[in-house]
Amino acid sequence: MLIVGEKINTGRPGIEGAIISRNVAHVQDLALRQKLCGADVLDLNCTTMRYREPEGLSWLVETVQTVVNEPVCLDSPNPVALEEALKVHRGRAFINAISAEDTRYRTLIPLVKEYRCKVIALCLDDRGVPETVDQEIAVANRLIERLTQDGVDVDDVYLDPLIRPVGQGEHLGNFSLEVIRRLRSEFPTMHIICGVSNISYSLPARALLNRTFLTLAISAGLDGAILDPENKSLMASLRAAEALLQKDPGFRRYVLAFREGQLT
Ligand code: THG
Image 1 (spheres, rainbow, N blue to C red):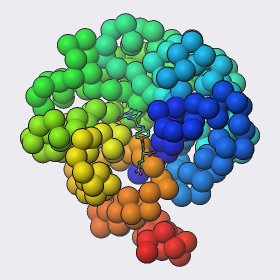
Image 2 (cartoon, rainbow, N blue to C red):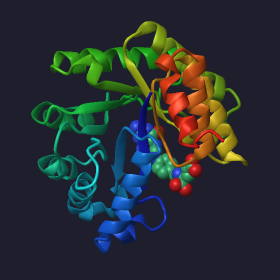
Image 3 (cartoon, helix red, strand yellow):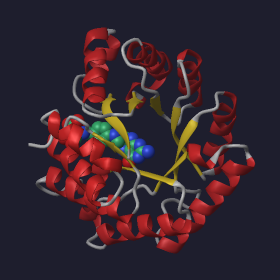
Image 4 (cartoon, helix red, strand yellow):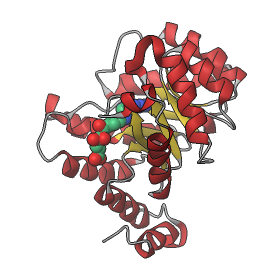
């Protein structure tokens, strides 16, 4: 499982202030804590900063990469912010996210190529979020075809089916899991990632829904997740699911997490 730590996001309390005041220690602490809890990649999102996003995002990249070697995931559709951040990024960054929306695709693909980025690819086109599983598969197909034509290695693509909250429709839990199962069977070697907390918006006891959904989604074929790695019970469920589904060779991660006191 590719674990993308979500905590450096100006949608969360205190983060925008930390960026504006250039609070290096606060941001580096968030980066180090997420890495220690198992994050493979750190998502950086300061989209709420609007015209100050380019300087904010590049400052975040430099600040984070001073203390961790993990790549970052630039969570923005803004090509100006992405370019400023990519100029200072060491190694191969992730762009979060390209999609099959024509303008978005055309704007972002030159950056993906120039900086040899990995990409999160949203299963979304100019008609919006697909309403049926078949439509979703069709969008994913076109997206993969287009990315491949543009020279992107499929192993560098993480499809994101854009999970909708089950609170918006009782069928949306089953629907999301069915989409993941179909993507997995149509594209056996593709990566599939999603934001875990989307599923629980507007319902009580969100953490319970999130970790149960994550377990079901891993069983359906998910191999990447955007989440809070400091959420102990969520990460414990993830490690247990990997162990039970033969996604943790030698139970290495499970046992390591146990030894580090992360499973109790
Ligand atoms: N797909 C892609 N990118 C995404 C999302 C997605 N980026 C944004 C979002 N969805 C994922 N990021 C966040 C960031 C913060 C929070 C939720 C999603 C958040 N977390 C709670 C908090 O910090 O208080 C706590 C979470 C917990 O305890 O588990 O607010 O879907 N491609």
